[in-house]
Image 1 (cartoon, helix red, strand yellow):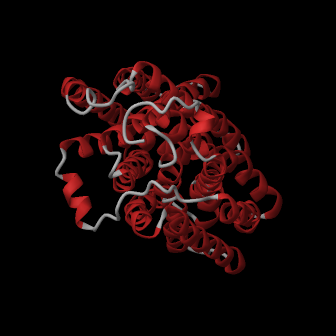
Image 2: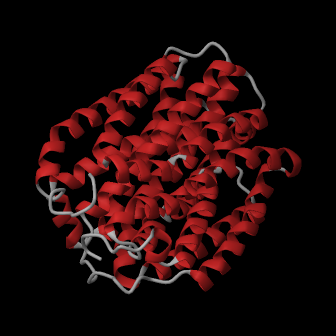
Length: 407
């Protein structure tokens, strides 16, 4: 299974219960990871937060998740993905139960909860290798795309968090979130299974070794733009809509959900497109389109009817990019996939933290989030230039050594 084609179809090649468990775990974990985003307009009003504090509140779970992805990547190689995921789920369930029971009454309290929710964001470094290691190279794009479609959990947060907060109070949303979390946790314990094709555990120094490879840094940048843009906007759009267009948090949640749903839906398509046309070509188109859309958004859409389609197109584009990046990563770093999933996930989380916090700071300093969008568009251009610089070397070195797989 290290290289070449197995001849088996996708559904014959791997372990479906684990793939499904990885998807569900990723899904509910992402739902709670970004839940402070749609609740931000309500929480900030009650606690009296300024735009910068609001931006930081929704960005902290993303930063914590980024750091904890490295921890989970390391633990996954040491004790297995299933046990690592089990520990993270217990921490998140306990943290939400405490927040629900005692309530949150300060800005510092929201930051503390954000750190706990980071463990949910770190599910990325568990669920993707948990699924990936069951599949041969020619099916990596589809396997990673399906497991990674857990991004759709952000849709549920956007759709229901503000609605439930209006009906029951925002603190009770934490308690209600425990219902799907516990249900999926039980299924995960029953269905998930570590692949027998586990590489030898990597020491902590393996991260330093991998980081000596320039390709690792490129992948961190590439995912920092695609996934960072996806999760950063998922967290920031409810506030953007309520502040910019005066809509209610519930309506802002619906508008956000439409864009997040598109970004999640097309992630497997990104993996499939990368399998078909190559990850490099797919990402090239992604960065060009994303940069153009972000520049248009930075001009300040005049109405909700213009803004919503723009963000749907942007998150859809970034979603394709998420799938394409993780078609390439296992091809280049198959034996180090646990370490690399953590590192690339870290890059994505840092990108999301930067975007969400910068939009808040830009709003506070200039009265508009436009500068934040423009700088992120520039980052997409940097990623495009980087991809253009490395593509020839990739195709003639490690890409040429993989039979039957397009990069």
